[in-house]
Length: 292
Image (cartoon, rainbow, N blue to C red; front, side, top):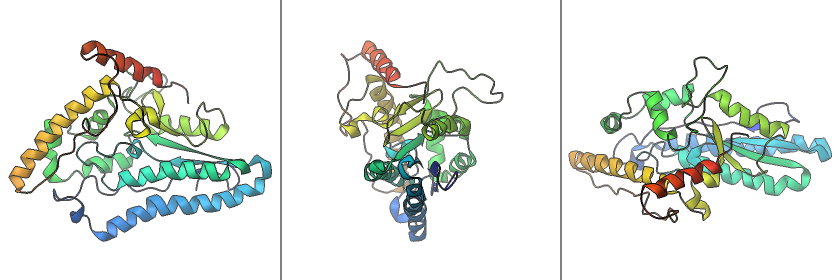
């Protein structure tokens, strides 16, 4: 629990768990203690934090309070990069549901809730995630040009970051990487009431811009994906499908390779071709916000 007992509270309990399943066999290779631990920290922890924070905020009367959930873009991107962070992902989907539930249950009491959803952020946690890629998958990532934590982050952020973003008065920080100071701007806007987002919203943070979570992966919310998004996901699909198939042959195991494009990702905007991809990109950019 962050901040004072009666003021804005950040629901910041979280643990990343395994970067990938320890073995190519998937979930059976994750021990039970790890599964219980990550669910206890990432789901039970925030719920208990919320319960006791609300109890304190009720003492404020009509002034209420603000609860800020710390989630991840993983809330709506469970298939990214061949099952990366396999148990962390569903716990962050829980955070989105918890935030909406907090807001719905306590709005009449003056208590609001928001969710901040960072992309790959340059923190100690991200370094650990990058360092703990299992040996069996390192060759796959290397074939995609990913050999260090910065490359790992850029691979995940390249579609949604603002390509025109330029940092000022932030020496040593790269324009196309996300840092804790970027996320703090969104959290501060939630806490001081200057945000343009509505209570209950989950807000994805990328270098130079933010998105409502439904813009980030709209098919989950009944919307459309842009042609640019589909083009990117198709490339990722092809690379990962090939890498996983080769791995399966090498390890003599049976695997099912999910396709992002074939799982109901909405209608592509505009006619097919390069012009549609460009229009799709512009549609996506219009959905982003430089403000918080």
